[in-house]
Each structure stands twice: as structure tokens, then as C-alpha cells.
Length: 413
Length: 69
View 1 (cartoon, one colour):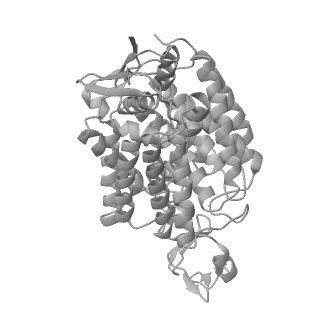
View 2 (tube, rainbow over the protein chains, first blue to last red):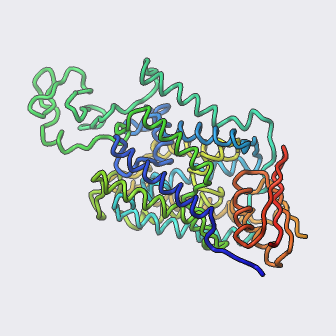
View 3 (cartoon, rainbow over the protein chains, first blue to last red):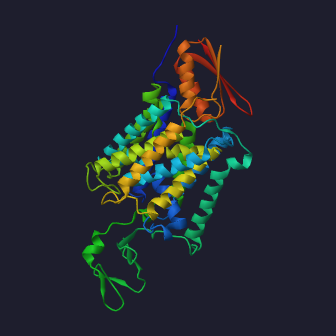
């Protein structure tokens, strides 16, 4: 007699993992991270890219090596080593994976959040995230059409050991630059958004929320207005008060972010949490384990946001978000389609890269380069809405994705 | 006995292939996997489908065996 069960123990483990990650992410907002951005793989990789190349990619407002990412990499690596799941592997279409990572990032930065942050935005009461969530579902469905047609990128193979250490090595290098720029001297070529900095006049007048004038250096704050040494008012008090802090300057204390990232990395590696796999598996193979993960994430974030008074229900006035319904939907459809072809969300790519998967490292590299390019070409959205070239770019990316999906459909050898 | 090799495949291929192999309701199934994720996903699927699951680990792969309880 066959005993089938729809909800097994792994579903509850994933639900618990999602609950934990969502709760920690919302708590990180209370510790200083940007609103509904306690954790965002796309945004944080983008900020990291901003540190290295921000001076030439218009990323002054989003430049900081996010310790959460370093923690996630090292935590997942440690968990994989302890459980002997660290295996150097790769060789399954690395260049295509780079391109897919690049496209994922561009889509995420048009929506303003990755597939993890879409759920976290919803968990903060940001109903404009619903357009993105609808896009996630659409992207999954489009991806499934091609998976059913036989899309796959071939088999990865065991690789020479050093190749498995690519992402962990990058994580350690990022940690070194983070510590150097925080406790030592920031390299001249690097960009770091000032903590709690507000770009009152972008590139020219920058003050912090506690009233220090960072730029220009000879100006001072007088009755809330920024006044130059010669008495010229550079920005009136109203403008200073109305300017919101730059996202890159909003951050939890370094060690809190790092430890939180470590914990999230361990939990994600052990649970295999994925922000898109739940919907994919539910539709494709009628498995609901991973779905418990995102539901847990949503509940954890919602509850903790309510506890800390960060819950704000509505479509407008949401932190680091725009309410362009069609743009959000299309951007997330493109991003999720790319992630389905990759075999997992950006969070999973970071985790797998930390387990020795060189193909996932290539996807993460594509995301990093994609972030720099998205800002260089002024393709990223702002709270005001989509950039002018967002729609043509989404069209081009959709065409590339369909081409990859069609050309990659074959039977597994 | 049904045997299949999902080594090196990205998600959700290991699950899709295993699910397909289960359509013929084999009394015994062996799946070769090489990532922790594929191992966990396949083992959970087999357990939920009513198989008793054992996993043998070698340097190269995980051999996941399901026997109809």
C-alpha cells in the first residue's frame, strides 16, 4: 500500500528557515538597513559593486560592502564544509550563466529588489510589491514552459579544487576591503556612501541625518540650511529636511550585519531556501516544500516589522520602491525567467557558489557586472519610477532569454 | 529496480527526473546525485512518496536508495 504525503518534514524545516530569514531581515531594518531591505541579494551585490567601481558608474548613493553578503558566503561555506557538501563543480554553460546573472540583476534593479526583497517588501506592507510578485509568478510560468520543452544547461562536472573556492575567496577579499575602509583608510579609488548621508544636491551638497555637512567641506548647517563659507545658501532648510538618506548610507552596524549574514548563510545552506523554487515546484512537480520557505519569510518579516513599528500598508510612499505596476511586473517577469533558467534565485546562486559551485560563481559575477552596467547606463529605477531606457532594455533582455531558452532545449545526455 | 543519474544537473532537473521515474511505481529506486541540494530534494521526494530512504556517500556522489515500505 502506497502512503503518499503532500507535506513532509522538509516543508516544515523550510518554513522555519523562511521564518528565521524573514525575521532577521526585518530586524536588520530596525538596526539601520534601508526600509524593507534588511536583506536583498541584488541590492547588496549592487552596493558592493558600487564600492569598487561606483565612481564611474553613478553609484555614489549606493556604494558599501554589505557585510550580510560576506556573512552569507562564509556561513554557507562553513556549513557545507562541516556537512561535507562542499564540492568543487562546474562547467555547465558558465558563460550563459554569466549572461543570465547579468539580466537577472538588470531586471531586479528596474523593479527595485530581487526575488527575496519582493517578498520582504510585501512583508513590510508595501503593496506595490504585489506587481513584482505577480511578475515572479509569470516568470516562473514562462520558465516552466521551456523546462517542459526540455531546457537544461547540461551537466556540471567535478572540477579542480581551486575553482570551487572562487566565491569564498571573493568573500574574504570583500571582508578585507570592508575592514580596511571602515577601520583603516579607504582606498582613493573606492566609493563609500557616507553613513546616513543625504544627497541634498546630488554630487554637490551632502549632509548626514545628524547634521554634519560632508560636502562641500567648507559649508556649515545654519538653522537647517546648508550655507557656504562665503554666506551663499546652497540648500534651504526645507530642502535639507525633505531629502531622504541615500540607501547605501543606511546600514546596520558592521558586526551585527556580518553575524546576521553568517546565521542566514548557515540556515539557507542547510534548508536550501529558494525565493522562486517554491512556486516553480508547486506548479511543475506538485511539491510544496520550498513554498513553505517563502510563506515563512513573509510571515517572519510581517510579524517583526509590526513589532518594530515598521509595517506600513499601502501602495505609495514606500521605502526604496516605485509604484509602476506594469514596469514592476515586466521587470520581475524577466528577472525570474532568468533565475528559473539558472536553476535558482540569486540567493541560491550565492549559497551554491559558496558550496564550491563555479557555475553559480559565474552567475554571481554576472550579477555584479550587471549591477555596474545598469547604473552606468542609468537603467536602474528610482523612487520616481522607471528610467527612460527601461522598457527597451527589458524588451532586449526578454529576447535574449527566449533565445537562450530555445537554443538550450535538448534532451539530457 | 529503477536507476537514474541526476549528477551535475541544476534544479529542478533532479526532481523532474525522479518524479518521472516514479510514474511506473517501482518497488526499488536508486538515484545518483552529486550535490547536497539534489540529495536532499530527491530524498525528501522519495520519503514523501512512501519509500524508505537510505543514502550512501562516497567521494564522488550520493547514492540515494528508496525501497517501497
